[in-house]
Length: 133
Image 1 (cartoon, one colour):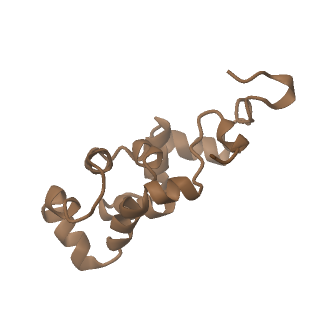
Image 2: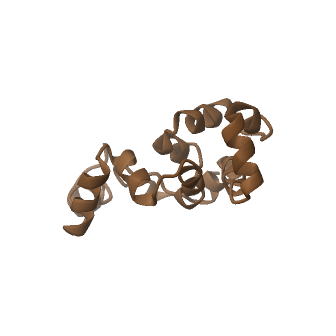
Image 3: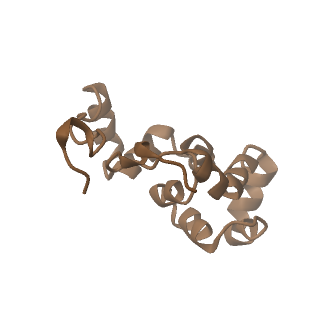
């Protein structure tokens, strides 16, 4: 019997829960391996060969190769682990976050300095009398 997960009803949000953690375990372990300089060098020398050492799904590997961090999150990646990929590529967390929102780094910075994204549309779909879609 699946657990009732009303929190999954947040528009545009992938919730990192136990199920996502299990799904992304090897993806996240790969990311953590990039904390060691020798692993970063091996990855940069031949990304596909290094990824093939990990029992990740092909979808996860393709998402890493494409640096599609939103897809990595959908496939169980945790942003704090995925940040290791960005660091390996010489990118700041701010640059990574900007790419995930479709904004330039400067646009993302301005949005965050101005107080972040509007809360409009970031509630449960079923909240405040709105019906679930």
